[in-house]
Image 1 (cartoon, rainbow, N blue to C red):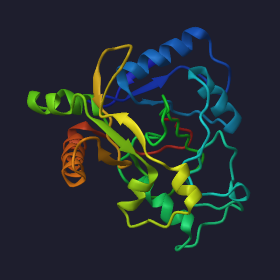
Image 2 (cartoon, rainbow, N blue to C red):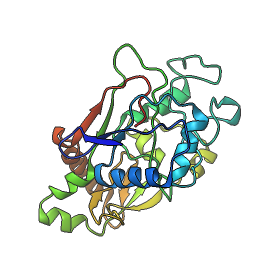
Image 3 (cartoon, helix red, strand yellow):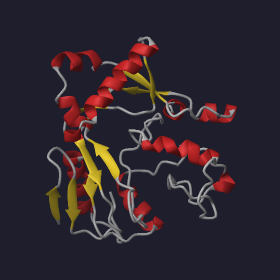
Length: 252
């Protein structure tokens, strides 16, 4: 096993395991420890299928259901334990430019924390490169721990006890998408999240930022969103950002 940091503040390459096969308890513990330290791990040359990816993920907890979309059951390409954020329909054909699902999915281009719009957000997310484009398609990650560490003391005190409301309706609204059915409005009802979170293992704090944020409790909405905008601008400075350029077989 070899762990190699690849960014000054977070992200490491994790080599020496084969994720096609069941992991030992020691390997699972090593990955968990590395995640707590580095926040993002890159596993190169892991040519896994859906079942193998799900088996790997189950080492770290129960899989959440992929409810963060507007697909109907007959439109799904993947089962409910796999999130489908692609530009393909159920027949593996590209969405039409004006397809409602494509418009909704454009929200994934915004800075966000995966499943922060759920009452219990995911512990980890896993992205597996099964096919990659000839150009583009990079994925960027920002270290909310380092961003928190570098905040002035007054700002840390200001946000210490703030509670935010997260919803997919808020993030899609930033791009002008507001056409939700009554059922979708119920499905995507806002949930409460603390703005500052603490890692129970390391004790390190981070800012829980996301484009899904639409309110801060006990604060006028324009003031709240101005503060969130300022925090996002701070937290997505180049020194906190890692850009992953995909290679076939990467698992991140």
